[in-house]
Length: 143
Image (tube, rainbow, N blue to C red; front, side):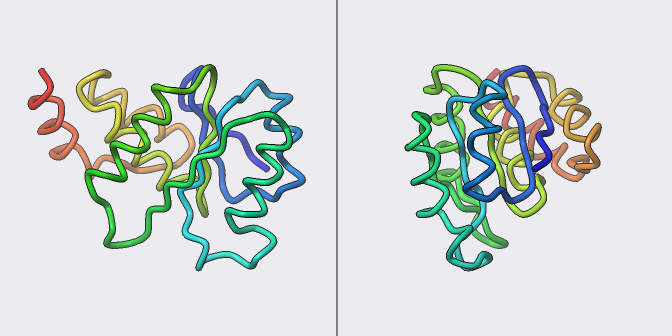
């Protein structure tokens, strides 16, 4: 497992296993968001298995899968709400951490500067520069 903190309260990671959950809790995270569709994983790494481990550890689990072609406002809103409703730091994962970074940036547009939404994920190799026009448009709608 590779925890990549974008901020003090939100981190992303490539795919996790149920046995990673204790380390996630020990790192201080209280909510885990799965942004990876089950069809991309074997059963032992799918949402049900990870959810069981997360909930057994006393944390909140949110399933919010993002696949190619299904980026909707509903998915962005679900990510934003999960972050806003968390009682502490949020840990989100997908195949590489990129989708979790994209959803964070879209959910935070208007609340954080666009340069920050691009630069923070870039520290971990996530290139969100192509989202700049969309992030700027979303920020303008909220501003």
